[in-house]
Length: 349
Image (cartoon, rainbow, N blue to C red):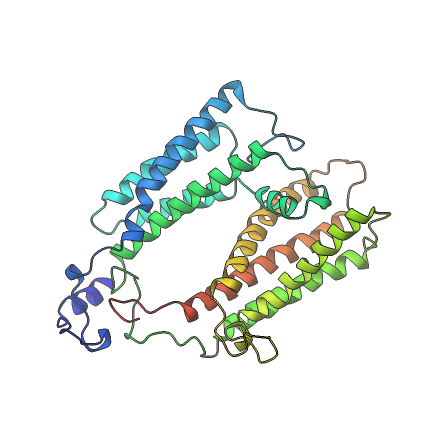
């Protein structure tokens, strides 16, 4: 099917000077690979080699203490991370040189990128702890830099895989979009699945809150003034990220400032204003609580006594709620991205 669409587009007439893209689709061989996609594979290769070398040095017995948590990576630490970096380097080189469709190569690229990503669940704690230091979340600079580097390798490999996928699939080698060359309408109503995702994220957030107060964890005990201020900031951001942020992705006021906003009423909302935090929070919640749920399954099957441990009944409500919150937020963000992205300059989709 993709080959047939590519053939149809190849036979399409060239656009005349001054002609709109919708009036004449360019030939595939006349559309260059975008410059911003051509550097991702070399960058992924270089970053994977450098970070893999650091992890090799640490795995051979020279690792630092990494602070209170005692580790920088989970799931695939030490030599596991070295193996993933080696695989990322090999895949990045292969993605750069591949000239025809290789489904197995694309699957491997996404798989290794995802494996590197789930090595860094503690990066969510690092970000929250650095933004709100009064919460006293353990923070170690070396571990933070290691997790950031690991996520960078994952992101660059994912971008390289997407670059290769766009070159090999779809009608347009620039955007890989298919269908009629009609630009997206940023003010069109979002699809039904986006509404379900956004309101599901809100419901999951409030399920987490009700579980906490319903099981008696609502009072944190005596706090100093700085701790109380930090906790108030965290809880305010928590509620906003669980209510206003997902709803802004599916309502009109998330694309145009409403009338009651001073100086900005009626203007377009910068697309990254809701999209960037929604994407970051979604990925953080999915990774951190996805790994946490797997650990919770193990602790439920083989209980391990802990001092002052939180009841499993609370964890079995809170952790899936967090994960579903991240899933709904990410799905709504995907719909927002599709609706507000700029049309491709080559195919006008």
